[in-house]
Length: 511
Image 1 (cartoon, rainbow, N blue to C red):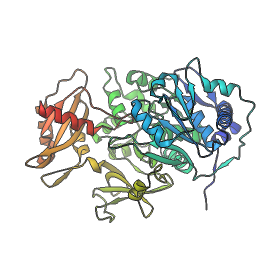
Image 2 (tube, rainbow, N blue to C red):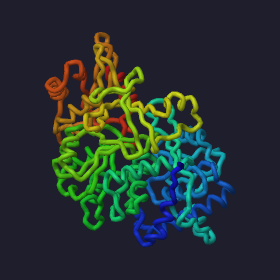
Image 3 (cartoon, rainbow, N blue to C red):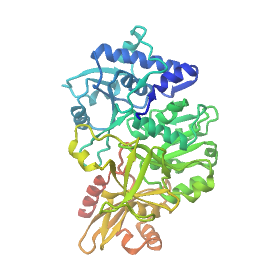
Image 4 (spheres, rainbow, N blue to C red):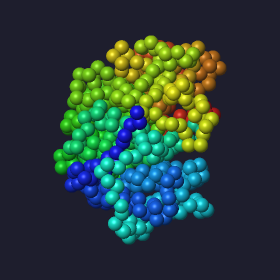
């Protein structure tokens, strides 16, 4: 039987109209659910007025985190259009590639990013975010729009958003996210992290990324909680907001790197964050030593896992610090609508404890990629999505993410996963960030190379790090070289750009 999904914002607007839905730190503006619903209906009218029938058309958006992104996305869902949020940190040629790929009928962009808009863009544009906010003006001029209705039903299989991958290798590809995908992922995370109508999420994860848009925002909005939207992550400011009793933040979602930066603050004390119902991490493996430090401070840190292609898929249930400590480093158990298995190179399911590739199926899994049938053919096997992530499952059904399979290297005939080495190096208190890559070696085929950023004020040597690894790891896993640095290149979603590190490695070896 086809699942029924109602317009949950319209529902909340009728059942709890005065409940605070959104607030923005940058503008000090706020919207109740009734006001959010009305704004989306006006934005829907604008789309129809400018485009005629928007059904199936792509509406691209280049913006920092804002309420406008959610208002436009909801307007797209209601009008049948497809919302395409783009990474504003990309260079103009990269933005031009994405726009040429999705071919939007309308581009909505902050005036701050005028330089990212191609001069010969063959579609309409609307500027936002300054004194000449064309979208706001058009919405203000809209007649009283149609009432969506509390019982409005939307085809759950309809594509509502295209999310482009980080593009750490090759050209980015657009994952097709249906209403069912986003709803099931958001609901699964909400159930696992105890979201209620009294919950308040601090949002400074990028909202053009699945973790920020669907993992955090939708998990809160589906239930009817409050989003407090920050334009970007700023470690000192984020920490102050998390502990501010006036804001009463209950939930926070960040990538592992952001959590590490918080702990490096000179005045950091994790104990005040024990008031959080859940601190959710994702985007990259959260090393067990790092995770354990948070839990020992009393923080309900729930590691989770998901992708643009799968939305939010797993999490460690919160509420029991002993469980969180016992499963530190794990990414938890699958959400209710998700099924996972660990598969070997021969395509057979592996027993518990063995590392293989995560294959997944369920309500959160994308139908595929935008106009990339050749990728779809490779990514899906008999209804299972091949994620490209290596992991293992323990006897309790908890999954531990090991690494991206493509980042694994072979040294002396042995498989080496960089994330395991990174976790070992993270045990050192003076380590702020670390990334490990495999590089060619005449004797062993490949060996490890570690890039390490010390904590502020700390002094680290390559000898210290290699000595620590020698005491913790098998010899073939110990990095052959270590570079202490002040920067590790990452994507906006927190993933290490290992192809950039490999180029840096070539330059360092050549110098």
